[in-house]
Amino acid sequence: LDLKNLSQQDRQMAQGLVKELGLYSEKKGNFFTISNLKVFVAEMRISVMALGPGEFLEVPGCLTSLQEKQLYDIAAELGLLIKWGKMGNLIIAKPGYKPTAWHSRDMISELFDAYSTGSYKQDSLFLRFPDLGSI
Figure 1 (cartoon, rainbow, N blue to C red):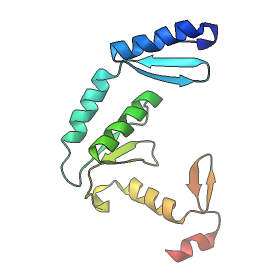
Figure 2 (cartoon, helix red, strand yellow; figure 1 turned 180 degrees about the vertical axis):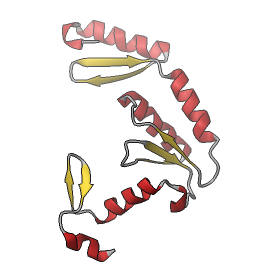
Figure 3 (cartoon, one colour; figure 1 turned 90 degrees about the vertical axis):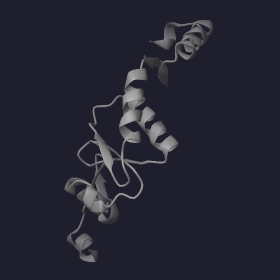
Figure 4 (cartoon, helix red, strand yellow; figure 1 turned 30 degrees about the horizontal axis):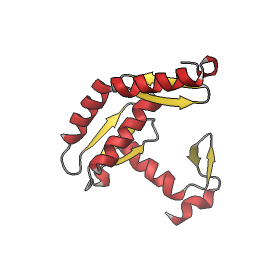
C-alpha cells in the first residue's frame, strides 16, 4: 500500500483495519506492507515448542521481513536462541544446545564471528594470515 497518496485519515483507517483483522504490518518509507501471517506464526510456534533441550530448527532464509520479525518475537517470548547462519538460514535453538548439534557450516560461522577482522558485503572474512594465529 503506497501511503504517499493517502490522507492522514485514510492511513489511520488502514492501520485500524489491520489491528481489527489481526493482520501484521510494517511501514517502510512511504509503503505499508500488510500480511496475514496467522498460519505461518501458528506453524512456527508449534515447531519450536516441539523442540527438545539442545535441539534446533533451521528455517530457509527466504523469509519476508515480517516473517523474520515474527520469528524473533516467538524466540524472545519462549526464551530460545536465534541467529542467522552463514548459509542464509535462520536457526532457532533451545537453550542447552551443544555445538556438535549445529551443522558444520554453523560451527564455521562461529569461527568467523570470533576471529575474523574484516567484512565484505556483510560477510566476515580474514584480512591477514596472522588472524588465524590465535586459533
